[in-house]
Image (cartoon, rainbow, N blue to C red):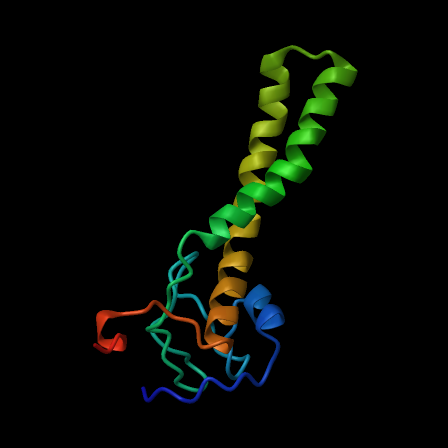
Length: 128
């Protein structure tokens, strides 16, 4: 499929949250849970520049660490529950929160990268 210009027709954040193409907003950005599609099924835009890197995982760690860890700690301190019970309750919550946030944040990071023409600098880009 021929790559189209990086002119966003929709908000990169809203399309990223929905896992949609940053250009047309219709085709799926993903081919699986976290794997990006090669191109948009709707408009044919190429997703070859995909390089979200570790950014989405870092944001997931920060969000979960700021929101859920204090709740688990407060639960432990208020209830004085055995540690095994606290872990039994809060570990699945942590895992589910991480899984729920990873795909949307990966979509947002890619769509923002695409909309801002951001990509890795290659040796071909550097002139002597």
